[in-house]
Amino acid sequence: MPSVFTKIIAGDLPGHFVWKDELSVAFLSINPIAPGHTLVIPKLEVDHWLDLPHEINTHLIKVAQIIGHGLMAAFRPLRVGLIIAGLEVPHTHLHAIPMEGMQDLDFSKATITADQSALAANALLLKNALESKGHSTGV
Image (cartoon, rainbow, N blue to C red):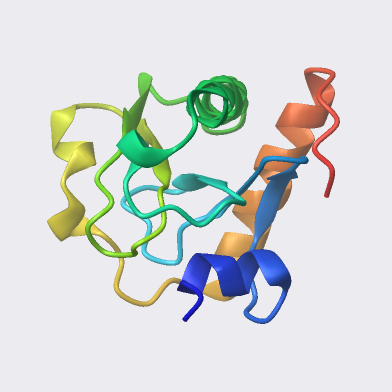
């Protein structure tokens, strides 16, 4: 059975995309810890990041860094944290999270029901920041 992320990638479920390329996608988390919380996901459905081909892991980190620069420009946090947790969905995903301190990486503080209009506005803000930095987002 396909993961929820595979269904979002396929367009069977909605997502607020900010990046699409041949190997990966990035979209905003529906349970954000902070505004702009973005998931970077391989198109290849693999549960654990250690089982991904090396070139896909390398690509995901490259995309996460690009997304991180966009988050810095769009949301002006002190830092952007990057976490690979992978327990909630059996499909590798990297969390890029704007943060002011370590408390901003606490998943227990995630929004349970995100406002879809706020997610759409934040996705547009991030996408515009990425494009202003010269990146073709693919979305």
